[in-house]
Image 1 (spheres, rainbow, N blue to C red):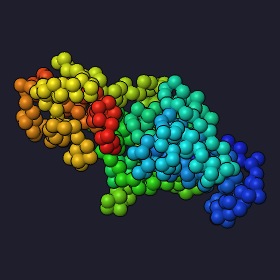
Image 2 (image 1 turned 120 degrees about the horizontal axis):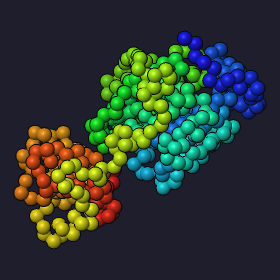
Image 3 (image 1 turned 45 degrees about the horizontal axis):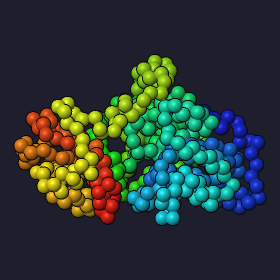
Image 4 (image 1 turned 180 degrees about the horizontal axis):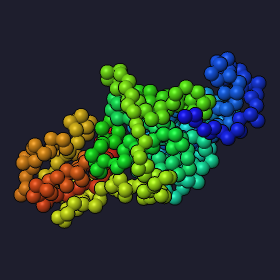
Length: 393
């Protein structure tokens, strides 16, 4: 099936300047691109959601390729932990708005493009207004609520969604094109249970990996604009960096088609954080289990109270930093070793930020434990409130 014209005939009225002929000469001499193709790129409007690991390389290459208008969505600031993979930002940008930092780099790479900043959280309230004026949406996010939101707004507005995801050494990429192919919900109709799939912040990611997947997303975006080649519509590309292998898997359009016509079960944008079950971790499991702040824990430990502090992070995280006197029992090992945790003492459970510890508390509650507390903010909260000299990661 031929792909629809994403630019709605806008490109014939676009002209290149003398400096742009020189800049894009390697494109223009290619028969697959040519002068008309470069004019299409200049006419295109692409929205990049997230300027992190994936958004960094794909935005850089789209800017260099001459995509005329790049929209950037991000509400975060640059942190030192970002610099291992988010190559659009530098050490001098720590503490700055990610949108502002990324925009400076893109304009330096190509001053002829227009960069539009959306410095706000992408939500069900603003998604349609932001996406409506763009031809293609590129998803560079790293959480399920935003992925479902991006998918659904793209289906409702009939916009292609160039998707990528990364974790440790594995990456995925595809193109969800509602006009001619499946959507994200055809691949993942329902999200996994909260905490079932760790984020990159919890499980880590090879810093080079998002560069590979982001470049694939940029390539697919350019192909869609030019109308050339075979885009990854209906195909999921999987990249294994450890074994250096690429595999593709077919994705079929769900006959029930949950979003959009002809038989939608989702007819509008919803509260995706609640839908995915990740609205924080403060709500405790049944049984009266609550939370304890780092300051409260420090006071009780200093007073000599017999508080058992259980760390459910991974051993490599434990090597980076630890709360004095804690006992390490990684979450994956908890079902086989939970008997090591005392039932006759109060147990404070923590991880990096609170998600895995909440899952551990839920499991221990099911085993009859009643004296359980979740450390608010995890070890990051401890480092911020109690021990500022502790390494953060």
